[in-house]
Length: 379
Ligand SMILES: *Cc1c(COP(=O)(O)O)cnc(C)c1O
Image (tube, rainbow, N blue to C red; front, side):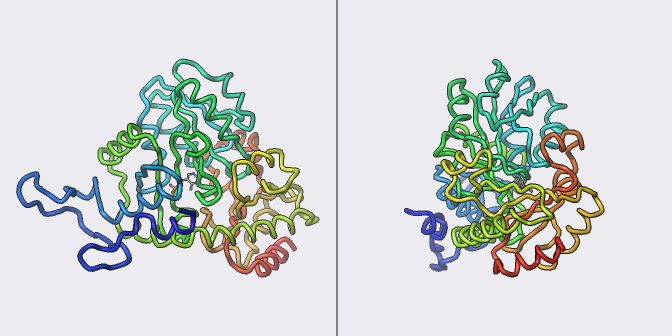
């Protein structure tokens, strides 16, 4: 089945007791047993909930995976992956990561004895310089946040496979509509479901998808043992959101392209990061592994003063100044003080996240209104 059909139908089985076409919100903490240990497959709702299971089946299908486990947030999903490791293990990861991922790695897991190597992954062969017998995990994001670098998933997967290292791809920025890392050799796909999958800025959730039953079993064990499970109402909302993922993504991509082209020649813009431009350094890889280029765009203003950057960021009328991305409404974000504030300034600037960088999450409004808004804000 093709993407749109799966997005609408996968996991959505009519309710057996009433025929309701929409999966009910099973708002329950426990399930009545006929006799001790005799139940209908459900014991306690931290472990299993039918609304969550329907969503997991749906997300697995649209990522071309066999298994999905959902978590109460994207970082809870990342946390679960890291809990598969043991003290002394090493992780190779990118130098342009989501701020919350960086914070989780350095502030929570480093003190437990896990070592992280933050390296430039735009050339996958750099991984070879950091491998040793303790390397257990490669964690990558592509496109990266916010400088929109593209990492070659196939090239990283070849290195990981040869050394029996688990490759995880944070696919939040692309969404399953644009990119399916499991097909490119990744072992686990992570999503901040909060973003494109939910799509309506009303839920915080995470997901992990894999084809490997042993990995799935471990992740599910961690979910049930650590307890970062999402609630049934949120599962229902995301299931509803995903039904239009393909329609939303088409418009995100269309609007993204129009706005990127508009900004490219704007006199107040020094630099623009968007992987759809042929002169983007990783454009060829983007073309190879993505179906389109999405609605995430970063710009660096010519006027570098923080005062000017704040004035521009606060001048939008249709775009809202907020963290997050991937919703139907357009957002503008100042990474240095918002999403990436937890990364030290020096590290941040090395990765190109300068004070005059603004990140746009282009929504699905009418693009003429969005361009007019950008025009007046820059003016
Ligand atoms: C938002 C985000 C996360 C974290 O997810 P939450 O749902 O906010 O916990 C991880 N990675 C990327 C790329 C994100 O944008």
